[in-house]
Each structure stands twice: as C-alpha cells, then as structure tokens.
Image 1 (cartoon, one colour):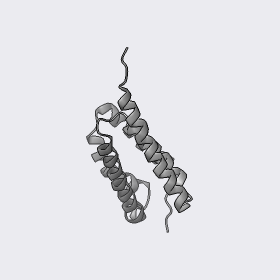
Image 2 (spheres, rainbow, N blue to C red):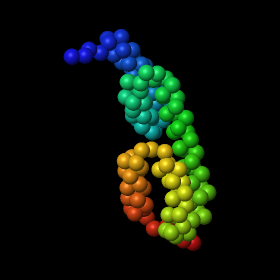
Image 3 (spheres, rainbow, N blue to C red):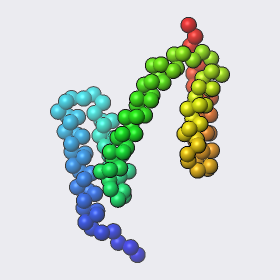
Image 4 (spheres, helix red, strand yellow):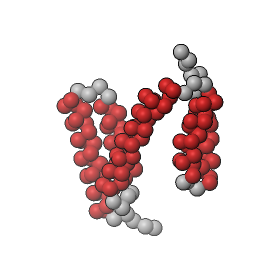
Length: 130
C-alpha cells in the first residue's frame, strides 16, 4: 500500500487555500456580480493542477490557452458567423477549423470529438437571415 508524502499533501492544501482566499477576497472587495464563477474556476484550476509535477507552469499554460480560446471565440462570433448564410456554409466553415483539432489527438478521442461537434451543430438554432 503506497502512502502519499505528507509534504506534497500539505503544500497542495496550502496552495489551494491561498488561491481560494485570493479569489474570494477579490470577489468580495470588488463586489463582482459573477465572482462566484471565478471562485469555482479557481477551485477547478487547483483540482486540475494538484497532481501536476509543476503546478504553476500548468496553471499558466491553462490561462494562456483560455485567453487564446476566448480570442478565437470572439473572432468567430464577431467576424466569421455574421458572414455565414445557411447551414451548409456554416458546416463548411467549421469543418476547416475542426479539421486541425481532429488531426492531433489519437483516433478514439478524434471520434469522440467528432460526435460532440456533430451533436452541437445538430442542436444549434437556425441561423437568422436578414
């Protein structure tokens, strides 16, 4: 039976407590209406990085990826989607973007991601035409 090093457990606990305290303090100090979501996000980051060999580096990488995903979503929402007219053009536009995502992971994950993208496109509302 393996036993986890108590120093690792203590440092993970202290790191999570400090991050949660900072997120809660920021939420209360600024009276941010959506601060609860920031605290939940901080808890998720703490949980995901708790077993990483270098949690600070992983948290920074997660933040950078979140910023890039936000910028990509903004570009698509403001510039690409308004120029798409009809479902066939939407499908062709998204197909190009998703092809690069589908080419990197292993085949089983690619299949699962493909199912998710087909399901989300099948459930999307009809595009408005003006």
